[in-house]
Length: 274
Image (cartoon, rainbow, N blue to C red; front, side):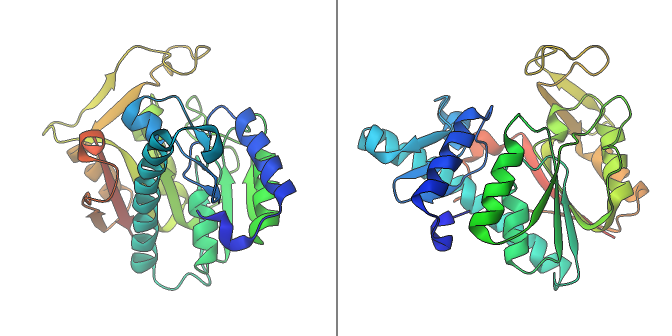
């Protein structure tokens, strides 16, 4: 998402930078200005530990590496969003929910393309609600942020609303109950489900927990302590989608200008259509 087209003020940008510094991770690839951008792609590819960068504070080599990596992530996201639009048809009467929205990249872009309503669910981090308030002000779009994450013990987001389009990006791979989560996604999806997660090609109906328990969240207890990378086999994902009423399942193939295949290989993008 390129905020330059909305002409944010210096005060708005300064406030947004402060919010993003206070967040655990400025996860999504935003362009704040000619001199500042954010995103986790450089850390994913190069283990840099850097999620926001200002051009004037680093050497040109670091800036070029950071912007190239997050530019690839942004291109990947925008291709995904374009595919959603092409498959969903006209968005003017459609609602969208993102079940782990972070700063709402998908939601703002879908509102820009004509969606009727967009709802973001996630942890509040703590200042994520401030990010939505400010991004709504900057962009003129009204994404509704609800501080309710998916609950692995109850297998749902409390009081989650149904939507025509449901987004699930990079959240199932951190969950201990992926089949229950998939069933929850099916229960709130009216038309199209977008799913980006770790999917392997094993021929069995299999869930694999990679790494040690409590990689990210130390307070998680058994049986919801597997938060490293949870991969689900392709047959299990496809069985679940069919059982949940998705008649068409489409995989978006990896593109050369996305994040490199060396990083992307364990993941897949599937779109289920009712």
